[in-house]
Length: 429
Ligand code: CTP
Image (cartoon, rainbow, N blue to C red; front, side):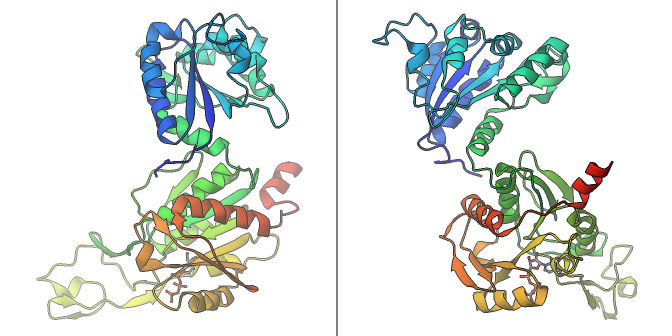
């Protein structure tokens, strides 16, 4: 999903400490600029061994700072001036040594000095985010883990690290996140935390109803709206479970994903989850019907009698049965087990009238109506919120922007449960 403009009006101080992951910081600076941020790069002496300030200046369009003795600042105080008015300081890569400095409050170079000298509290507070990058043994070392716990306790946000192949040839935890992942983490960091600590369940995509082992019935849903809602809910601080039909989309960061094919599988995945989630958003385009029977072998043109249903000559005639209505089933769970349910209505005509009928038929407090054929597979959408009180259109926009608006709306409408079954069990354990 495009990040264009997502960091407009943000000023990021990007710090680089020494590590081979400095090569990724070049890409990260580019991603920040492309997302609309202004970027001021500050590099430690060790970082300059891995990548040159010339590269970072070219990518950020600003001279790079490397020393606290830089004479360009009139008051000779770059460690103060650079963070005043900044939206955040992001240190990527953050070496084990640099994290140790932060943990101890040491300030013997410009980057550590400006981290210590940045305003911590109030409107002028400048948050600090670090993206560790180091060998897996260094990351696992008790000293590093102690330091990481300390900087977290001091209010620093730690991004990653990821597991995988390392430059040293070993495999394990300690890789710096990729540039686009860091960009998305930063975008998420700036979103309001309207669903902090809450559990959100989302269905997305089409379902696939098998006819035989090689054929089936599906629809044009791309899953983009549901995936955008899952991402927006995670950005808003929720723990998100995404039950996805067959789609070609990457799982949003931090989201737990369960893949299914058919409507029956989707119901089987959703039901046990629904009871421990406070909010259920059903965006999936669930097939209304499935073939009454699934042929165990491929139906052959020259052997019509082995097909599903009756056959007329060489053309198999399919018969259908109705699929369970997942949203209506969840909406009928007893109070205390029932999440706040939000349905979608993908219509081709009389959008609001059909959406209102679904609100009543499915017994849910909110239906989000849209024009299915106009939005399937596209990045933009137009939504109308329909509830018992009336209807309200959200401004047409890209799906992620709409998803964020919808998440804010749901957070306002959905009262916090006194205790969910999951938290109640944890509390009594
Ligand atoms: N839905 C569901 N299970 C189904 C059918 C629909 O959970 N078997 C949910 C969808 O995820 C959506 C809402 O119900 O949130 C409305 O889906 P839609 O396909 O628009 O409506 P239908 O109930 O299928 O009615 P129709 O096809 O006649 O418009």
